[in-house]
Image 1 (spheres, rainbow, N blue to C red):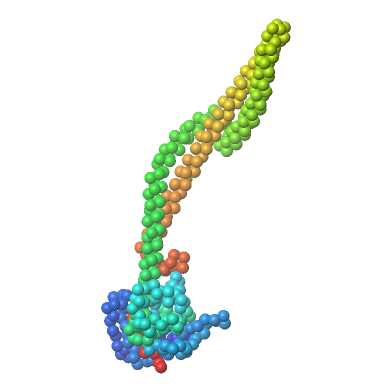
Image 2 (image 1 turned 180 degrees about the vertical axis):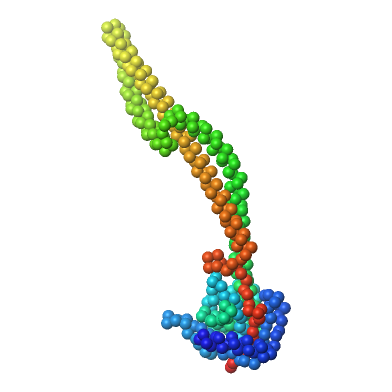
Length: 354
């Protein structure tokens, strides 16, 4: 199969040298593209078919429509461009030029035998040969033009994608640069407030240790607060009961005096509990105030760090994408940003052997 492809290429070159007719095409996808009409060497109609057993070469495929002409294009190979028949047909259909095909050519395309893409073609110039069969010379030209146009559009789409990415990175950079000074100013003010709070509570502890201790103390104060609440509820119940009995025994001086004494004792106990309750509230508030400042300081530190990193990443992305757009590449990861490069800007039209 490779020797057959090479012989076809040599045939193209030889017929061109021996005086094939050159025709400029004002409607071609590139202003430098020209068509060479090789009427001296008919080309066999051969296509590649794929099955579970592999790739097979077929001569004169079956079908109600036979091609009369074939266009051959040699395009510089690159790692990002697929050369499968499906990819070639996709590029053709991507072009509005495909709408200009004759009805017969459109029917011929449906057979699946209108394109030959030689995935293992050998070429000393690293150019890839693709053949387009057509029912007329004009359709052969249109097929070639549509393929080139589709490849060009694909490259333009890849460039547009990276330009869009560049715009997003530039916008992200501007937003981060605008936000960073305000965050840094807030962080600086918070750092002083945090230092003051920490010196009052956990001066000799690390930040993480101080936060852990604060959380533990808050939990202890909440537990103490709950216990005191329960005790105060009990004393209030005792006071209510004592008051009821005092009202009933107001005429009994001795019993009234005893109940009054009990009432005073419970009131004193209540005062102690309320004082302890207030103390736990104060301690919890101080621990919470420190923890709030700690969290604010931690969050602002992280946000500033994220913004600084975002600025660095955006600058790197902008630099890389600017370089990529300045010097487009064909890469399997980046996409093919290069338009097709046709060998000697020439497309050859051959008659197809009957």
